[in-house]
Length: 208
Image (cartoon, rainbow, N blue to C red; front, side, top):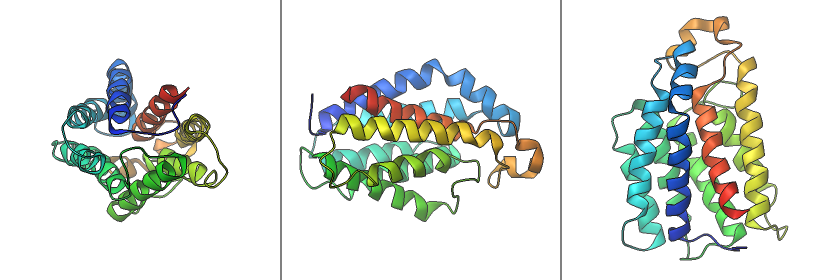
């Protein structure tokens, strides 16, 4: 079982995440169509394909991860590409070596969340991708300095992200086109939160 995260592993994980997102692209589009533009599946696949491609590039881990974020951000996918790009670019700021141990990975994901929080005011309960991202990273942060394995950390994070995504069915949308529907957005999952949970699950599956 791997005890560190390298740029090569990141490339494998992102490629696997893209495969799962592609399988569920139409599902994500349908979820988004219920309360939004109906293109989230298409957008997140496009952004993550670019990210995965950049992850195969040359350079140090820090440089590659920044390029992953830049590639995602450069796609014309509205907030999907900009927030995805911000996440990985923020993560790159915390990369300190070519093999990141558990606590360093947790700090890296925390830096990614902090960067996204500079780009959006959305919080848990606003029916956005933050409903999956914030709980996932918070769960990771709770495990720092406890000598946890990456397998355990990502399994806990993926579970928190999934629970957060499922919880969006109870929320009223506060951002994007969906906010115009008000209470009518209750009863629908947020596609962005679901896709974020898919990405965290890809990390968990890699380290099993």
